[in-house]
Image (cartoon, rainbow, N blue to C red; front, side, top):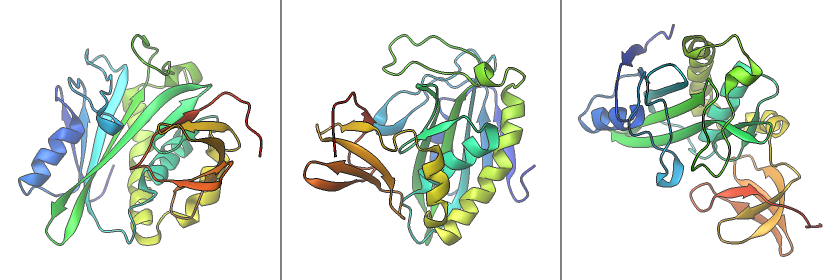
Length: 243
C-alpha cells in the first residue's frame, strides 16, 4: 500500500503519536504507518486529550505516519495534511485552521504533528484521528461529527485505504515545494474564510485566509494580523464585526 513504509497495527496503544516519538528518540526512524485499534491516551493540539476509540470497535480511526523529513519550511504542514485528508474523503468536508476537519459545524477529525531529532534532519510524526461512527459529545466544546453520517458505507479500514497513500504523497510534495502551491486549494475548503473569529488572547476580526506559509490572516480594527499556529487558537465568533 505504501512503498518504502512498514505498516503496523497495534490492538492497543496509549497513543500512536506517543509510540512513534518514543521510537524516534530511541533511534528508530524508518518510515512507518502505525495504526492503533484501541488508543487509551490520545492527544490533541495544545496538550488536549483526544477522545479516541477506547473500545477498539472501529468507531474511530487513529493512526500516525512517521518519516524523516527536511522541508525548507515547516509552516503549513498541518494544512497540507488536512487538505490531503479532505480531498481523499468528500468534497463537503472543510478545514478549520490549523488542524481540524469539520462538517456541518462539527469537528470530524483532528491532526497532531510532532517532530524529533533524527541525525541531521527531523523525524516527523503526523497523527490523525477520524470519527467513523457517531459518538457522544459529553465534555467536548465542539460537538463531534462522524464520517458515516456523510458516507454511510465506510468503515475504518476503508477510510485508511483512501487516505494513507495520498497523504504520503502530499507530505513528500510539501517537503520539496512547501505550502504555497496549496494555498488556493486550502481556501476552497477554509471553514473560517470571511467569518468572524476570536483568538484566545481576545483578538477579534474577520478571517481572510492564509498566506503562502499557511499563516492565518485576520482583518482587525488595527489592520491585518498574522496568526501563527504556535501562538494562539482560533474559533468562529458571533457577529457583529465589520471591515
